Length: 386
Image 1 (cartoon, helix red, strand yellow):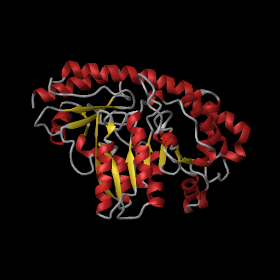
Image 2 (cartoon, helix red, strand yellow; image 1 turned 45 degrees about the vertical axis):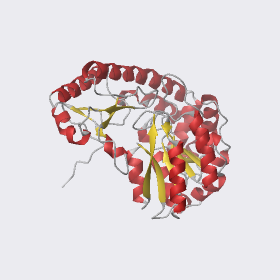
Image 3 (cartoon, one colour; image 1 turned 60 degrees about the horizontal axis):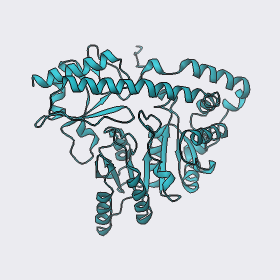
Image 4 (cartoon, helix red, strand yellow; image 1 turned 30 degrees about the vertical axis):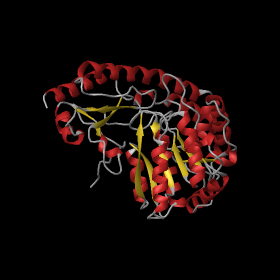
């Protein structure tokens, strides 16, 4: 018997506008550019690209990545010994947890935060402790109180995980003032900060503040980046910036010692893609398209949702973080929304220790103007008839 297996991660149900998704628009994936970069790369270095790769990642991509970041960001890129090419941000987080923590260790997490990162940390047996956020991002004063409390109890946390720039799900960006304070606090408490920065280059109004990594003393911050959001998720390729000591712990791990660099062939393709100037063009296209779609969704929410609903217009990233009227639990309300033809992710999934029941995450990147307007209209109708 032959089973029919899916080709993609998620299926989308007919008749439902799946605002729950965290995906790019498939029509914007640069197939032609990837084909061009692959051909250029194979004509030049096929044997190297098809062999086992260097554990840290191929030098061609590390050099291209650092040069590209130097052009794109208002900060100095790290030296090459502080760069590891990963299989995406989630794989890098999994490796950090595997190599730098033990089951039973405590991890602090910004709340709300990326719900699947919580699963990765739980897979490694970490105890998760929430640190609240507000409209400036992670509350550093609350973080300091939590650190002092855990230290007094003899259970200091091993790491802090946060999405500081265009947070998933809230869209909020940590202010520069708090980034600096967080860097100082991490040094004082010997805390590893895992800065998941996959949305950093998808800004729509103005560039975000410089990274926590650039403000932190060497060794206290690990910064994760990914080509999934700015190029294509199917590449399964990203990067990690960390101290040379942490990079070398990863390089010497069994999986890299056995198989060489992660997604080595893809890494060569992406290096050529950057060298050809195609990544700059792709990001410019994504910014223009996603900015327009964000505006369409926000305006549609203003038109169709009850006045009691609130949100903050995100300055970048993928999501609008919607607060429903009082007494409405987003998880309990979801069946009614889906019956009306629209879906979302309930907010409680983004809080490791409870909270977020009135919130829901809405994606705007993968839908047309008409779909976004219709999704908001359906959600408003379901709320009206609740």
